[in-house]
Length: 259
Image (cartoon, rainbow, N blue to C red; front, side):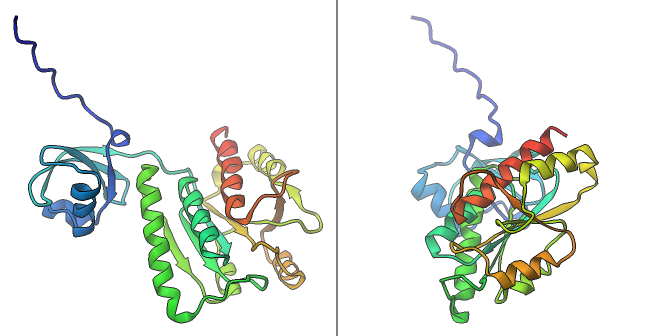
């Protein structure tokens, strides 16, 4: 019987390969960081000759072929176009760890540029200052995992604030507060109004998500008096704090993509 020809190696896109964020200098050195090398070899069981995708965090993806002992060789560069058309920062009120981690995962999948975390008046959880850095590092690691999974071109940043108003006053405008106070508008209706105007003029915006018990009257009053702040509702159903931001992002991108 004649030997069958070995098919040529098929080209694979970054979406078809395991993906890892690395610093730009790693691409020059050609050696994976120890944590990535461990995951490649001992979790994914990849071997020399296999291919992975390295994300440099600046908008490009690189296909790399693995060598021995964590070494690699770059073989192809891809420009990624997976980032949304504007920057969105989500300010999430401090909630229990499992809820907050889920909110971060969903928001990063949903395309945010950053997730800021701060305690509001009705936040049940009180995070000790000594644990803040450790928690932020863990949340940033979770964001990296989700950004790799989503094939994000840029790595969203997670930031923990000690005070709510310090975070709120630093947000980009306009600010959309997901809460049910007087004169609340449906998010869809507000987005359609902006769409009819000129959504291309927006550079960034912010989404604000409260804790399980909602915002206090004092917080609502102060936010309502701030410039370019809109109270918006997501619709007839009440969502959990960990899923509200993601639901709002879905509505936001659906409107922006139609523009």
